[in-house]
Figure 1: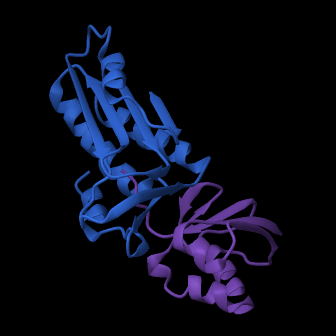
Figure 2: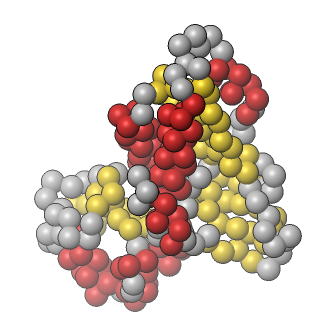
Length: 146
Length: 83
């Protein structure tokens, strides 16, 4: 299990390749990447605040839970904080499993839980000002399916 | 009891500090919230709607009725928006 919380960007291709390299038992690797999205066409920056210390613990606990639910051979979570511009990658998860169903399900579980149980808060800075992104009912509802 | 309090996102902005150390007799997180809210308007403003808030005790998510005995750090923040 590899959990990284960092301000700097990451090379998605290199991370995915390194994660998949050398695996002989795992027949499936699933990756997901979250990108800063500019809904209104006027987003200048996304600022992501986090809770140092708790963030790593919370993600590690979520990844540990995934490992108890599915037969996983590996989990990678990278999540950035700080300032990002539209199009930049915010985070990625990768899961490795013997079969793809476990890898897909674990990746979705990780994403649902990272969204509303890992202590990150997004603030959008546009030409008109700055506003914290509100959690949605569907974010919380997504946890119900697990 | 001495507690380190930390605030994030708009809770931090409303209270005006990222963290502080307080002496309190509160037995639960909810009692601590009531005590702070009675102290100054900026706390009352930040804690006005508990349904819009989350808390953590010693870096674990907790309910507002969680006991504070033995706790060292309490955090207040809005619902998380990671991913």
